[in-house]
Image (cartoon, rainbow, N blue to C red; front, side, top):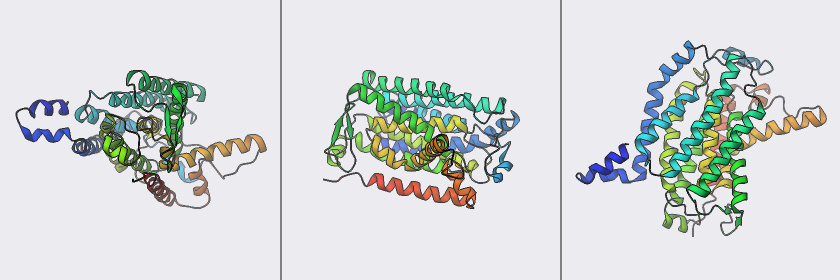
Length: 361
């Protein structure tokens, strides 16, 4: 809305032309979403507390987590609300990428809300049945893929860029693209959700990955930059930078209340939504493999769970003391804050590796 108003006013006042620059609006998006998240944090936490929406702690988890029982969860609604309000206020709403990102954010957030609701009302740590959750995520991923192919008519949908070897672009075709979209969105959504297990653990990696994707979106949206850096050019993808900035600001504001000792937890409503949204951004900018590197921490967390489950089913033995892997290190004697900060450092390292895939001429 602000962008449309600025476009009207710039006809009479030249200073409003600054709103045409995506970097300026990205800065505004970060500031606005951070401010909204910070201002609404306390009221939202009080509201969740009044509804007795408290975290149910796993009985087989680390004993140090028992004190967290009853801490308000579903704090992800604060992040989602901040992103939505900021996007509607600052972004160019004529850009179709913005609407598909809002669709993914809201629908997966709703799926997470149902999951959290079942955990709280029925006191069941497992929440929504895995099959129902997978069906919901699959439908969202399929609709997103079809929209990008047939409505947005996004270019380069038939090729997957191989990092470090930009001249290698593997042709997938429409069916291949839909399958890839499914695995990236669903995989990312669940991986981020698995990472959300300690105070502040998942928030900083989400911020780091959002910043990394913003860089790729900015480059992809400019033909000269994209060609110079051997990246696929995606017309109008630069507007995604504004959305990434909104994620960064909203998550930073949430981290203020989620830092140890956490006053509120993100819950599935936030983790599922943000994971799926980040995966969608990676699809839009055609950097699916780089996203796997950038979000390496999420990948490690997900793999640790798969290895643990697979090993127990096949051998009746566990590889880790507990999965996801952050709990393993807790049971090994690391303090919660040590695990969190060290995992943040690992996430930064993965970001630097992913940025090194950008090849200069």
